[in-house]
Structures are given as structure tokens and as C-alpha cells.
Image (cartoon, rainbow, N blue to C red; front, side):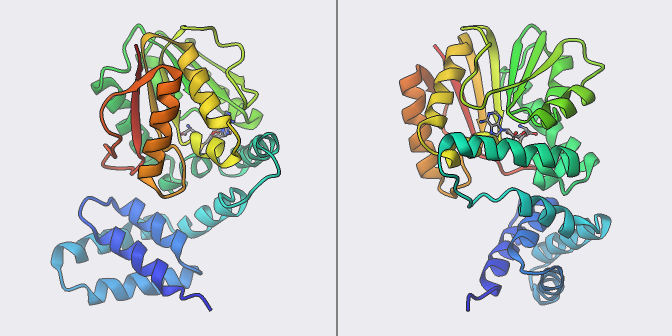
Length: 298
Ligand SMILES: C[S@@+](CC[C@H](N)C(=O)[O-])C[C@H]1O[C@@H](n2cnc3c(N)ncnc32)[C@H](O)[C@@H]1O
């Protein structure tokens, strides 16, 4: 029988590490544990046994984070039960259709946790994480007041809603009609934001060289998992739609757990598409551990 304690120990080690915010530590623990009781017992025992005061303080913060969000276990496991990242469809085409269906149902049942599990279904926490990301786009010079922005795989529009007030025009595309409807609802007061359902295979309808900043946050993992040449083809498409000097910020290429492989694959696809990487991929945020690739069209 598999040892359930090894994944829990590894999640607790992550939660104990300096720099890991409590909500991420909690998410990893809840994902690793076989039951809510096992997670609770393991966390309580880890706090009690931790000799290092700073590490103990971090674990106690995870406990507090959970106490403030008592539904965190069911929130996370309800989403994971629908969004099976280890599932394999018969073809890339079938996978795209399957994910569209999964995200349609998440848009209805768990709109916040469905797009950003690390927010634990708490809209205030999710908004805090989103703000850090959008502030960074501005700091990097990628988001400007006169920019036309494409939010590819926009989900419920949590990022679009923060970006639209800081740019000229925003287009959100998503393969899920449910997500597009929810993004429209959330951004109804933003006249420069528009949303449309994408076909999931390309960026049909988006003109060549029309976009200054393209954003792809946690969407490529679904393309990579779908297989075939879907992911490199979408990098090509994003490059096609970028204006000269335009930027692509891509957060998380896959959930394969292999940063080197992701960096290798994206470098090859980007070069073929005429994009260059601005520096090495990194994890630049304090509230989220997404692996960020910054690219630019010549
Ligand atoms: C984890 S959510 C992230 C949403 C949003 N980027 C965010 O960070 O809040 C992934 C989104 O990608 C969309 N998606 C998945 N495959 C797609 C595809 N082939 N084309 C367009 N969108 C896709 C899903 O419908 C879902 O809304």
C-alpha cells in the first residue's frame, strides 16, 4: 500500500519553508492529504514537534489561515474532483472540448477556486493575489495606459477586471462559454473590456500585430496536457497577434512538475514563433508560486 505520510511530509516541508505564504502551504497540504482529518492531525503534530521558532510560527499561520477558511478542504477537493490533471482524452480536440465542459461547470459551482485554487475560494484572498500579479505587469513595463491587452484563457475575468482600468482596451478569450459569461458579468462596468468564446485551437478573429500585451495565466497547462501540437501552435498564434515590441507574459506552461523541461519546450516554441525570452523564467510573486516566462516580439 502507498505510504500516505510521504506526500504530507513533503507538503509540510514546503509550508515550513521561508517565503511560503500560509494559503499556499495550506493548499499543498490539503492536496496531499488523503482526508481532512489526516491533514488536520498532521498539521497539529507538525506545529507541536517543530523545534525552530520561525518555522513553528509559519505552520501556526497555516493553521490560522485554515481556521479563517473552514471550508478550504471541500473547496479544494470539489474542484480537484472535476479538474483531473492526470486524465487523458483520446485526442487534443477531445481534450479541448472536455476542458471547456469542466470549466463551464466550475464557472457555475466554484468560480473563484475553479480558476485560482490557491485563493481557497476566498474572493478577498484571490483578489490580493491577483493584484500582486497585475501590479507586477505594470512594474515590468508590460502593461501601459495605451496598451491593447489580450487575456488569453481569461476565466472569470479576475485579472481582466484589474487590467482594463489600466489599459486602452482589453479582450478576454476563453474556450468555456460559462467562464466568458462570468467574466462579462464581473466586468460589466468596464466599457473598454470585451469577452468572446475562443475555439480552443487558435486565436481566430484576433488580427495580426494588434496586441501590445498578451497574458496567459494558468491556461497553457491545459494545452500541454491536451497534447499534439496544440501548445506550440498557440504560442505561434500569440506571436502572430502581437504588435512589434509586444509582450507575452505566460505563467505556468504545464503542471508536469519539471521546470527545466518547461523552460526547454517554451524556448524552442518561442524561437520558432519569433519571440525572445526576457531573462530566465522565475517565480516573482510573494503570494503565488507560478513559474513566469516573459517574452517579447522583435
Ligand atoms: C485555471 S483557469 C485560469 C483562468 C485565468 N487565466 C486566471 O488566472 O484567473 C484556466 C482557464 O483556461 C481556459 N482554457 C483551457 N483550455 C483553453 C483553450 N484551449 N483555449 C482557451 N482557453 C482555455 C479555461 O476555460 C479556464 O477558464
